[in-house]
Image 1 (cartoon, rainbow, N blue to C red):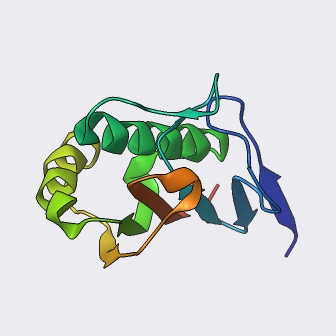
Image 2 (cartoon, rainbow, N blue to C red; image 1 turned 180 degrees about the horizontal axis):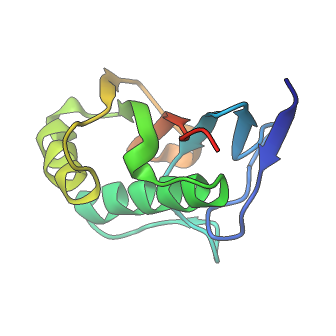
Length: 129
């Protein structure tokens, strides 16, 4: 199977040696997104809720560029520098996902790129065409 590299200007550009997403067959691996504003490549400076929403918006933009949506996500990984924000992630996630929810992991980490407080990556399965 061939690999397709997914790229969109509606999400932050890669800040390293990686692609925004890679599609193989009907599976898409979405790279980690932090709360960067695509147009400025600066972190959202608002509260934690705004940061979490920005991350979901960035993931949604990449999912759409790959031909899907967050509804196609089967696995979501959430990385937080403070796990006290986990209830807020759950609350905001309910605005972006409907049941059945994807499998998910929440991981506490010491640090994230650009000193972000949250990062998420995902695996998406697209319907056969």
